[in-house]
Length: 201
Picture: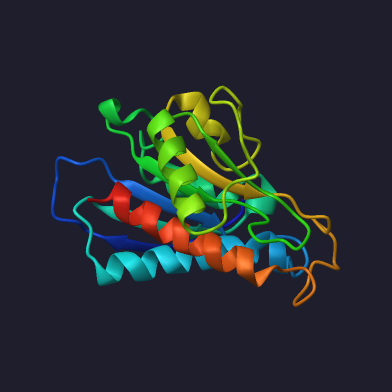
């Protein structure tokens, strides 16, 4: 049965055509209310957008908040179908991907980084430490993500993922306020905005 993706997409055109585009991505839908599962990623997404509106980027930036995460990444599939090759390495016309995944700032959770690129890993670790929220772990570069960046990893694209753990993951009890650590969300979002700025200069 056909489905429909309802993605929210915002494009900042940039001034330098020789730079690869940056995609700033987060899912916007899930099961239940999913306050901690989706809330932190949306805050990071919005804070990155705010920072780049205040300091316009050199690289083109496409912000996408995708629907259908819980339905086999329906929204991401639609986004990529409209931008063929963006999942490939930048030398082949691909984009750089900044992905704010699940459970960023979940109460009682952890915060981890995933990336296949050493420079992105170093940048993210430094900015999170600067914000007072160093990552609890950094996955090996060869680790294959289980979420939105899985196919980008397999295609050789360049990506950075923030991902958390959540004791209430996929449960209806994942609700405001007890499921969220606002301090972690605030610090992660500050680091996310600085990373987005750095990647677009």
